[in-house]
Image (tube, rainbow, N blue to C red; front, side, top):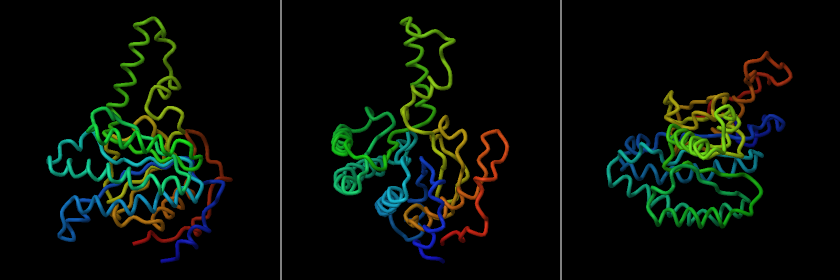
Length: 262
């Protein structure tokens, strides 16, 4: 496998995506394959988050959205959910200094009010503590589900209409986008899913309408900068037509790609 620096050199700066979203999957299977508890897999995934966040900032990506805890994850065992909440709180407290060191601003999307109060306080502290940073914006999707997000947006628009602030004909795609929790952010250009699963799992359903999808068999705790760079190289080798015709000036030479890191 070629070194990460060599792979970095193959990236076209003008085609770095503005927004990358990642479904971080495979923590439990990674742990099970090693005879460890599921929560050990979640802990191991922190190192991958740290490395990918650092790489995204260095490569000039403006937004990185990580699917950290879904509305469906409450169905897991009470012990695992409790451990995940503790891990989240410790991550927020510990990583704030690292985020500031790398000029990373933290934002959070999802139904935050349903999270434990101590976790909500940790979120508020970390968001406020990194608000002045001007580099990468790291977006954590917590207690998030796309259907819930769209439902909340529809309810808000209906309330505005009931108050006479909005006519039905005023509702368009732009207004809906501005009513979502990602308002003001560009839609993801690239969606990465680890562990080889071929589904989007209720993640950013509105926003990923035109995103390029990249699936790797690598479990999240093993996902590192070379894997991230390979996903970007694969993205840069694709044609993005958005329903139009091919713009050949945006294509890259397939020979410039590197093998998928193991």
